[in-house]
Length: 120
Length: 497
Image (tube, rainbow over all chains, first blue to last red; front, side, top):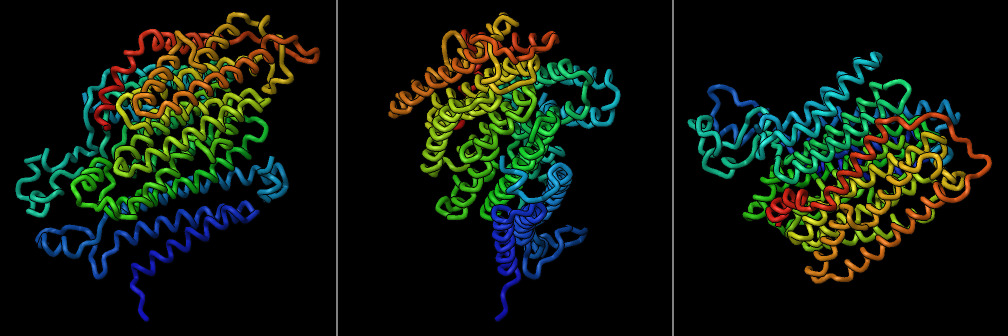
């Protein structure tokens, strides 16, 4: 059985989001929680990329001499890709801040257990 | 001058970046922060209403020169009217909100620069960045742009918490960031769903697609997008189930930082709620959900405030409770209800800031925020105590202060909308708010001073007193002349329905 690339990507994105949510909510290790949160962001990014995918499509650059009809029929949708690039940058910044805070908390508490650090 | 519209966002961002660069030069930090802080409320007053297209890329219908020679699939279809660039909308309501946000940002930055021994460029950077992000959230007609600034606002808020250096501030910041890292992708997923069904991220274009039948309103993907947008709204505004972490955030920040943080929450609440009402007005459940969540926020916020012993946390819960009033007005969906809700948003931002800064003077003098360890502070500074009690009157909705006018409008709106029960609940909860505030005021100011309470000799900085007086005067002006605010909000509310 051959699964369509787009459908497979949608399922992968959903799996990443669910796995990420599970890790963020139920795993005690702070680093693993952060990895889970990164999974959620990656899943959403993959979903967006998949939205812009066009089976058998071409890159969305309108070159001189190109037929407008062919371009519209075959070019993929560029907006999701631009959005994903921005989202990746924001995600990286958030990740860096989270990891920085965890380093400080590890030095203070000597552990990265969420139940020991975060429960007041 | 429509070119000033993006300046409202670009100026604080540029200032923030410069402050970060020169953070070691104290005098330069102070001068730059004060100058830009003064400019923040002035710019919206000078800007004319209208739209701003980034890169100058207006819809083709407004750009006949560009449209000439373009293929028919662009000029003779709906693509002709779609917005190709990020678009900012500036109308009367945005003008009022950004003006108030600018005044508050200026007062908070002015206070913080004078209260701290050494002006911190990094702290001012965070406050300007947060202000820029919330301004962009208020202006943006592009739902992806909203997501970007939603994340920037969350990161700035985390920075402001950490900068306080309070006990367990890092722990609270990490918790808040964890939740942000779930809420923001959910918001992005909502954007992706809306993009998937409509091919657009521009809010006006999405609404056009739904209203003209290009997108089937019964499409379940739209419902999912609505649910995810609601999730982002609950987190951004600190509504239940995020009210506990939001009040913890306020309690860990410095009092003036908390004042600005709650203003961020109020304006984010309003901006996202308006987007939900604009896009999903065809779903009756959306308005009901806004009312239910708002009721829950009012009841949980105000009752949990009763149980608090930390005054920063107490005000934090009261602030969450007050958000409920705004939500009820918006959820009613009538012009009067929306006007009243938006007026309440302006009032709440002003009053809660005043209370945070006012109670902050106690923290400044004693370093204690536990009300059980405080007492007898009325004799320390009777004038400031008087301003603080007036702020409590304002929050409870006692005339002649501004919240009286907005709460009266809210009760009227709920009666005319055929839901007088909501009016009764709002009045009852206002009484509980007043009781909660008076309990804290009595414990801190009026009861005998505990023998072990140490009060330092530092005078309250003049900047703090000036900020409190300015905020109180604003509350009084809006209470005596509510039409100043409602004249800005009514046309917007009419347009929304």
